[in-house]
Length: 175
Image 1: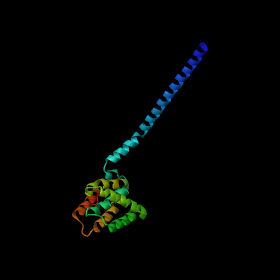
Image 2: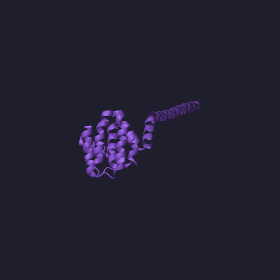
Image 3: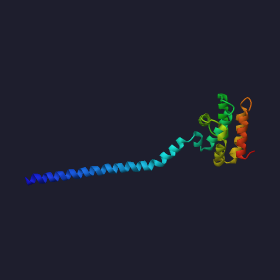
Image 4: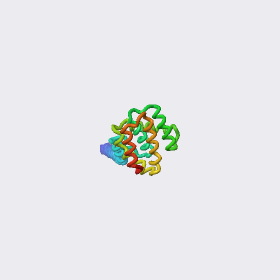
């Protein structure tokens, strides 16, 4: 009888040890998951920060900022026609020295940004600063005639377009 009790004791001890190993492995897995979440927390926070901002506030590329300025001045006069969009895309390809396909993609993003703006005039200072900081004053001076050409495509330049260009030139230091 004492042999049976010894065997049951050994089996009980082995079961207890295996159960403790299982609990420890679960705790290690939970700890690893928690560490993974903590490592991804800065990335999640950056994404949430960008998602909660307006679309124009997420722009940090000077080409995209310049494209939004080009489309913004045209949008001040009303809806942008396909002929205007094609002409502005061609101007951007020439100005930025990129392919027509890249300019078309950039134009689509710019049109999306401008479409989400209530008043494109409010974004002029921020976008001009992005171009100035990342591309320099030479880029601003070469962008000015393209903005004027974009405004001239409309039948008659509106007061909003004139204010847009004047605000850009003042912020760029060209006026």
